[in-house]
Image (tube, rainbow, N blue to C red; front, side, top):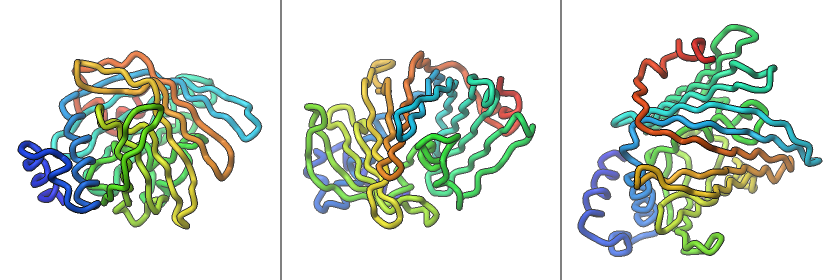
Length: 261
C-alpha cells in the first residue's frame, strides 16, 4: 500500500486527477491521497472543545475538553484529549497513537481508579465516554487504513463534493464501509455515513463551519455525530485552534496521561 500511495502521489504532480483515475478504485484512492497531502505539515496543534451529548428525548449533558495533537513523520498522528468538566469526568484523558496500518494504540486514564487502561483492538467499536463517537473514530484516518472506490459527484450545502466509499482494512473495525463526501475545493470531509458490520446505516457525521489556518489547513467549528439506530447524537464544538506550539513526543507518552490536568 505504501508503494501504491507513493506512486499515486508522484503522478498527481503531473496529471489532472480526472486523467489519473481510470477505475473507480484508482480514482477513490487518488482523492484520498490528495486530501491527505493537503493536510500535511501542520506539525502540532492544540484546541478546546465542548462535547454536547443528546439522548433520544433531546436531553443534553455537556463536557469540556482540551485537545493536543502531534504530526508524526511516516506514521499516524498522536492525540491527547483531557476532560476538564464536569467534576465526575475531570482529569480523564485519552491518548491515541494512530498508525498507517491498523491497529492504532489507545489508552484511557481513569482518575477515580488512578490507572491507565489500554483499549483493545477488539473493542475499538465501543462508545467513547458515552458519546456517539467510537474509539475507532478518534484516530487520524490514515490513507492506508482503508481501500477506496469513487461513487459520484454530489453537492452538500451547495458545495461540490467527491463521494467516495472506503472499506476498513482492520478486521476488528466496527464498520463494513463508510461513504464520505469530500469538498472538491478544500479536500475536507463534509459528511460521512457509517455502516455497521451488517451493512445497516449506523451513524452520520456532519462537519460544518470550516476555517483556514496558516493559509493552508482547514478545521471545522462543529462536528455532529447522529446515531440512527439509538436516536442519540453528540455535537463537538471546537474553538481556539493553535498551531506550532512546540509540542514533542514527550507530551504524548503514557506518563502524560497521569500528568494531564
